[in-house]
Length: 455
Image 1 (tube, rainbow, N blue to C red):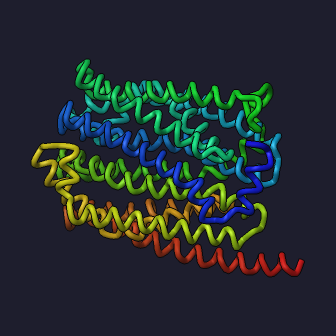
Image 2: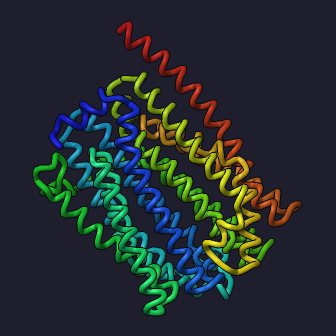
Image 3: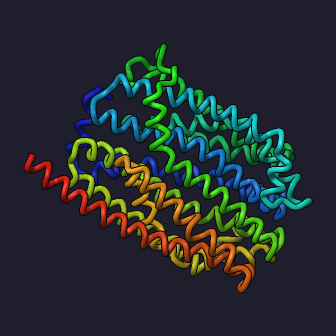
């Protein structure tokens, strides 16, 4: 792709066609990435047992925290890259690539160094019982050793999409999944490595894809590529990456805190198996959330570029279209889960008690699922146009201001069902908050357009 083709198409091509071009590869990639996690759980559930699924669920907070740092750099770098390309500033774009690699390497290594020696204590704090600790430790130790690889793989993939290569970004994710699934089967059922085998399969598949990404960005003909001098951290770039990526960081960090509370509450009111039930509910919800995230990733470069070019009508068009599709996806999730909760759960386990717990959890958790898509799209939209503060407020209000008090209050009266009910109620309140913020932003667009027209 030449230097001029990316910016021109984002600012002039039909919005529906652009969203399809950018979102479909991202949706396929995100769905594949979600199936990656689902496959892990299926192999672990059938190959190791119901308690191993619970052990895996105990690791979610630490995985969320690792993802928080990965997203801080990846999302921040990708959004900054879109904006700079919109301004045709290719030198800075190249430096963003180098800084993303440097930051991911530093943070990835630091995270492993600070968590691995204290892994048992961390997992105990997350709610691991004596029975769940060995499963959780075996899995997480391997994942932490490969953490720097995961960060680099995620970061480069986001930059691929932002630099006008959504297809290549999709290819990278699908490769990781298609390598991971047979390796999972081989290591768990063939070699008998248990839950550790699943973790090794995950890291190994990312190593292979990372090698391909490095080869791609080494191509001197591509308008951003690895070259000498771009890895030195530049204050303005790092600041830009952190300020934009902080919304994603806080979202994931808040999710980490919430999952710790959830796991402890589930353990208290429903025992080890209830933690496993949440693990299953989380994987199913994640599948639909990831599809919507595919749409929001398609939205991000289009909204970012057109906002930079002050083409607010195009920004508005792509936002409305993404909200429509996001809501449709969540409605499908709602219908499937409310009608067939047991069938969905059977994919992961044949343990009758676990099926009962997970089916009940699914039904309650998905109650207000149709409005979740809207809230997710609006949050990403604010990030895309550089309004990181609003995106942070939205994610933190959902998890900390609405969900946290509900998790502390409802279980006292309603036990395990109180924990399940906390999730849809907070989703509903968060969607109303999103609607109010979006209305205010539209008023600002109207004012800016008038000023721009008269200027």
